[in-house]
Length: 124
Image (tube, rainbow, N blue to C red; front, side):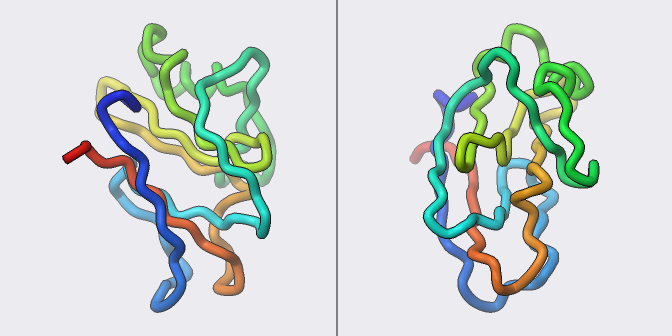
């Protein structure tokens, strides 16, 4: 999937609502700590993920992929956005189309947070 798409990002500065979630799984809005290091990578052995809505509890990324029914041949190719070495967001291919998840620590909660909007887009 990542070989066919490019990742665009821009800071959200004004006119933002508290609910910055989108129905399009290829778009995410994340709260980014100042000085954070963002890295795009694929899964590694032992990866864990703290999905938004699970009150900070983590689960194995492999279990998340199983629950989403991500085909096994794609799992090593799903791009994972990490922030300070923690998985923050990913979009995975499924039979029902792309499915995305944001991690609890990077969900937007207040207007004082630095907010970054990301979008996977087909290259021109």
